[in-house]
Each structure stands twice: as C-alpha cells, then as structure tokens.
Length: 125
Image (cartoon, rainbow, N blue to C red; front, side, top):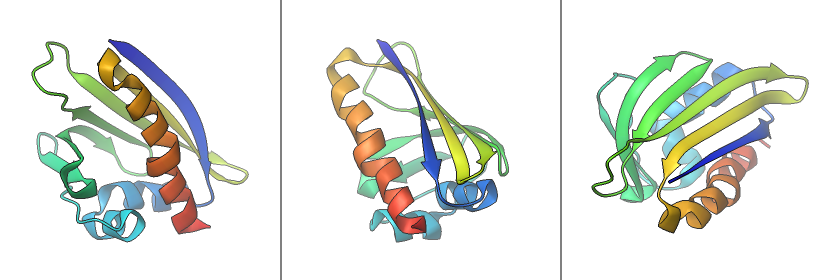
C-alpha cells in the first residue's frame, strides 16, 4: 500500500471548488459523465460512470471532503482527503490519498493530475 499527497491550484473560490466536487450536476458538467454524490456521511458515491466508487465519510462545506475509495476487498480502507485553501490564484487543493494498492498506484496518481484535477481546472478556466 502506498500514500500520495499533492497540491493543485484551481482558478475558482474554495466554495466553487467544493460545489464542483460535491454537487452531482456540477460533477457531470466537468467530467462529462453521470455522477452519484451526496454530502450525507455514509452515502455511496460514483464518478466517471462508475470508474470511481466509494463511501462519503465527512464534509466541511467549502473546506474539506473525506471519502473512502473502494479497490476490491483490501483490508485497510483507501482514504481520500481533499482540503481547500484560499489562494491568490483561486484555491489551493491539498489532496491526500492513503492506502492505494501497489498495483493501482501509477494509474491512480496519473488520474488525479491528468483526469480529475485537469478536468476541474479546464472547467473553471
């Protein structure tokens, strides 16, 4: 299992980024795919037409999102924490992803930058 931490700058306010990450209609706009998302802790979510699935753990509106991402029957949960900070250029997004299966690490870390946050940046640019 591996961990990943990275910062991204998104040209929008923390509240706008938070909404884009938690509102299923907004998610569909920047991903181009149907999304299932709720801010209810314990609810299941699905992004990119089921390519990313998991359970929502906690939310602090405009500031923080914590989720469990599913990778089969692994023993330890894979936890994604997204922390939003105001930045001169919009929002600094602090991403922490723990317990990524070794076999998935390269695809996941590339996906964070090339798909997930690049799509979000393009949406706001």
